Image 1 (tube, helix red, strand yellow):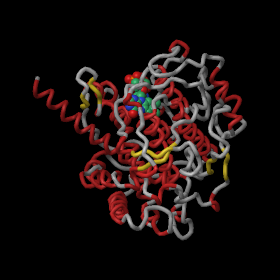
Image 2: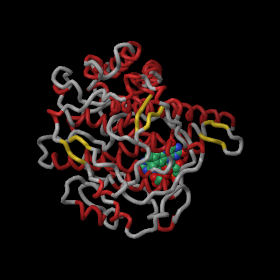
Image 3: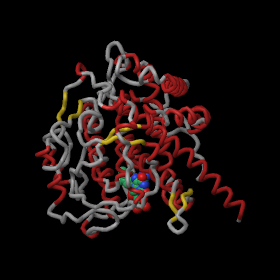
Image 4: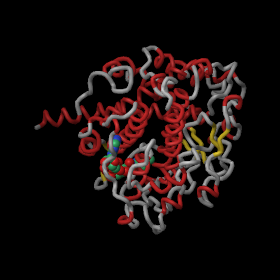
Length: 445
Ligand code: FAD
């Protein structure tokens, strides 16, 4: 529960700098005000795709798992149907993601595409007819009760994505990878994963748990001799996991009293006893801050193109974004994106493709989360982290020129980036609360 000190591994700043210069009340307040604005609180997402990897028919029946959808009338008109920006075609070779036949008959439709620069597979606001608008403020990420074999299976599949370069022996991904290895997408087909198992497997705290491979503690590549890129991949997913766990513990439902409050024991067991998990939360935080700073000027001129970005009428939102970007850019870079995929490394192009493909797979795995609320926040944060990676690894500095590239990102990517940064900032704030509770507990003894 101690505050970490010294250099944040694989980043280029220390914990003290983050605490003093970035994780400040001013930064947090700006971020908090920003996510409450209309532009940033409404997110359009497809919550009802089938899991493309296995039959997941476990449904979380808890009320806490339900997502309250926003009605069309609540959404400001300018966001409703316009594609507020589109990816600039000059930049990319369009990559069509696994077709419905490749995945499953009920999987994402053939309209779903992914650009070469994207680290996520997701439907833009105008792409999926199934997408719904959600008011993120009305659907807080917190304890829902989603747990058991279904949730474990999803985490296991996510950590398996960390094993790129080689398929782990005996991994349940092994047959699928072997088959898909020529395709270059790294995509794992569903039939192979099913392996003839019952459709009832997975699910919320039930199903045929015995059929599901048990979740061994994920191997932390940071502890092994691994290249920087693989360590970064692991840190990103472990940090996301730790951040989600922190929110669960911070807004925990006492099922006896029906009240929501921070649960210190939950935090100690899930996070504090594993200091590297908290370190990975900081790592994600500095990665996101760096992405914001790198694309900063570009993002704040987003409003220049009519119909794109933040409408000029929402001046308060623009001011807040400019203030946030200014604060994020006021420190030396917190993460050195140029240290990954170095041109001097002959394996860099392949490594980058694999990194991207595996993160895309993580974004697809989100459709296997059996609780709508968890799926919403899982998708949103994976999209936010994917957007950060796109900003850091897909473009050169000079690409962030609105005259040259008026639309590198879509509205939902910007919304996801800012909300994800807010989620991580909330986690660091929650950790402070837990530190205080712990100290208080010691004094009371
Ligand atoms: P889990 O959190 O399921 O972890 C499983 C195993 O992973 C652990 O035993 C440990 O070996 C390893 N592990 C845990 N944390 C880390 C880490 N940070 N780094 C590396 N390894 C780790 N539940 C909610 O109540 N609300 C939510 O909003 C919510 N959102 C979710 C979103 C997603 C995408 C997923 C997959 C699940 C979500 N859940 C949510 C479920 C929640 O994450 C847990 O799975 C659940 O609470 C059960 O926890 P657990 O103690 O069994 O361990």
